[in-house]
Amino acid sequence: MKNIFLIIMLLSAFMVLTGCSDDDSSTSAISCTTLQATAVEKYTAMVESMDMTTFFPTAASCSDLVTAMQALVDNSCNTPEAVLEEGETAEAVTAADVAEIQTVCDMIGRVNTTP
Image 1: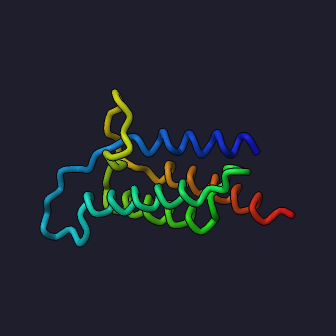
Image 2: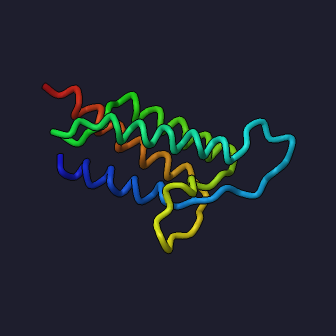
């Protein structure tokens, strides 16, 4: 179970990779900036939903983060700048990144439902 907390902390570090591609195209239905703001909001909600005795967020908040991150992938956006740590550079969110978060969410879901 301590590994899940470590994974969540690693996900926090992942969220620090930032930026949005400079796509100001009027054909884009939703801007990267908007999608990034949503991802930060969902990440914050997930962290705030964590049970401080087990350090596990709710499965629903984790699922919301996966959905927000997938939107970043679908629109070729980078991770939100708001979560960057000093010295980190912007990188695009990939399907592999989302799959990693989904794996952690699946593990959390199993732990949260285990009596």
